[in-house]
Amino acid sequence: MGRRGPEYREKIASKRAVVITSAAMPSAFIPLATGAARALRLTARVLGAKTVAALFIGSSVRDRNPSVSPKILAKARELGQQLA
Image: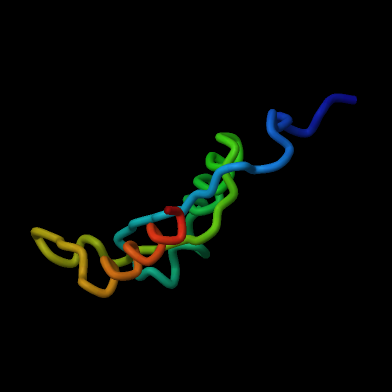
């Protein structure tokens, strides 16, 4: 019987990561309807990082020239401070 998946080289995650996901759907549906957050968490884990937070940015195609709202920028800065 073989292994169920790859083994991690580092058993203990020594780095930290923040997962940021953007989609056209409302942000509340991103973790439920897509597998993006899980895939990014697994990618961070393979790279030896522990996910400390996640930020979901939704409705990104509402405008022709989308921009990030001040509220999301403040949250992103706060998450960046957690990593520093």
